[in-house]
Image (cartoon, rainbow, N blue to C red; front, side, top):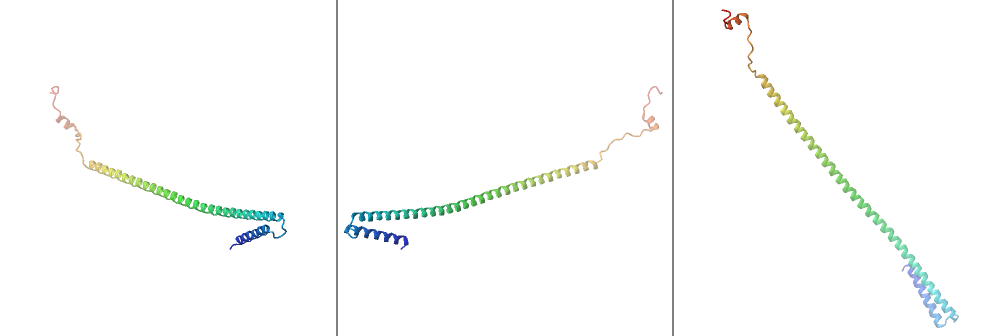
Length: 158
């Protein structure tokens, strides 16, 4: 039995005995003592009620503290989960950006190789054209003898 309950039982027992004695006529036998016993019983009940209210308030305060600790830990867990989600999302975005950048680099490398191959092909075609010598008719060298021989006679000269 807890000390509070033992005290309560003792007080109730004393009140019951006091009230019985007052009704039976024990003690001084005056009415004042009977009302005094009832008043003291009411005071004891009020004191018990006040003590019970204090205990309930203390229990409520303790419950509120426990609840606030539980809520704080829950908020902390939720914050950690949100932080993990945000970190994972940021990591995924960074990875996607990295892959996109790699794709762009590879695309540019392929385009550069194509341009280089086209330039080599064009250079080879130009070499082939230069190697092929197109016969060009050169003007023959004209000497005075060949000039008279090649020239037809005109009627004025004859």
